[in-house]
Image (cartoon, rainbow, N blue to C red; front, top):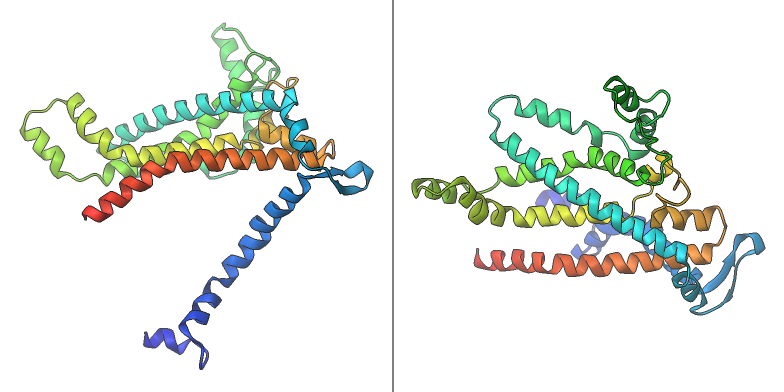
Length: 304
């Protein structure tokens, strides 16, 4: 307390000292989060065509009616949902499996952890360019390897049927290490006493996994699931670098369609409306998903 008081100005109360400490963070939040959100909400109720003079008159809920009647909006939402379910499900399965393998390893665990985190070291925009060359039909390494084995060489980013799955493969490659490292940290933090007692009782490996490991690890896995779902739902950079939403609109996610509407077609009113709707859906989903987890943490804290 004495060292803390030495940095205060004479006569500065604890309340104002606390306000000064959080003021920089609050200024950043107001400038880059709350003010843009309020502005987007205002634009969503107005006519805002940048080719006709910018933000215009108040139109009420007309923008929302137009967006909800737009088939392209629902197609982009379906593509986003399909991508999210497949990518997150695959990442969770592979990530947890890798975490168990690393947890049971006796040598080289630190080196392996350092190597698998490499896909996360750079942004999706940078690694997306690397994967775009891997997918190239003429010079790509993937088709070269398939050709050596005499297998079919697909047009990874130009085929309507597989373009979305090519983006899924890229996302799984980049974010599975994130799931694996978080799951590994959860495994290493589990208490040892229940497992030692189960071993003394002669419990099988499957029984230990079903009754101890996964129930104790469930909060960590559920939190990772929520984080990855939110991140996949707002996917933009990988699509922008790999496919630009093509071929056609087969890989056009909701955020990419939103950006194209606002920045290419200059209809900021429709783009703002879609962003507000997207934010509302994600907030409601996050609240319903995280409420049981928060209650579980609260009950554990009360018992402790």
